Image (cartoon, rainbow, N blue to C red; front, side, top):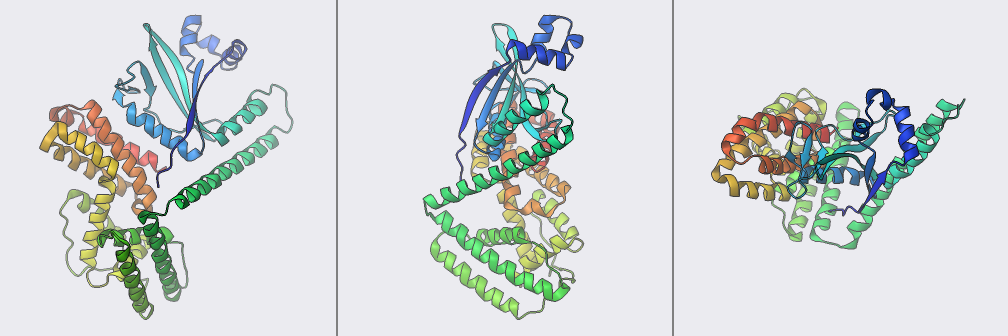
Length: 421
């Protein structure tokens, strides 16, 4: 389901009194004795605020800006082909951490107007963050009176902020639920069946785990990933296939219910795993290393192999193929790839292989079970789509790629890691 982001753009400027207060509060008069220098160093003298409905929309809008403002001017600022007089500082980490411990999407910008480079500040705020920041600004930062209960007041404000964040998440969940009910499609039917099969798998293996090691953990996300893989492997395309999958799952789980599973045993392959691409080799060797040394990975692959008990190595290879497709071939990634192929022709394969290899290396460096979960794959997809567009906007020849590939791949690594923090 794709959620439409609704937002409002507002221009804000400091009035004279507020400008005086800011200059005094931050001691700008000492740093910039020249008044003209001071004015042009005040990044928020002119402010632009993008207001959106939910906190989740803030990230989507920021990604949209990064996607279209990706013509690199220097180490910090970027512009767009359509707006080459607007420069945004998109090199730093976003959202930024404030003094109060909370985060905000705050971006420095510059506008080139009649040979003048005018600074401005761009903020992206959800409705709850707008409400919170206005209250906090008046009570905490603009209150010049000495307040004895200062720490108590801040604690209360922090509690309010946390509650607002919770409300934001709840409203977003309600919206997504309502949107999903508007149209009953083949996709929603597939999702419902996946949830049923995932629940059956979770209940069965949770019970088996309790029998074997007298403990249970939450592994629902692992079950969802495995079910997604099963649908991918069987190329499910219509509702008749859904019924077959459900029947097969019930039959297999019924057989497993009569088996004794040892959750302390090592997982083994019947033969050596064949790696036909660097992406699969990097991830596969990592999985081989951790599946018998880390419990979460052992549990994940134990479930995967138990559902398909005859060929662990074959299913492992198919699972790596599923990950390769999931990480590198989404609808929007493929669209960007087609554009790059029109420029580089067959040479694009060199770029594509390097990008895929970097994705695998970054995932291994993260070293967490959630790298195979859907929500992480979506974040990686967004970073890969962005980097392909960045390559198109900044690289025109294969020679340029070779000269800049190390920096671009490092940029991709940073984008993926930051998107998952």
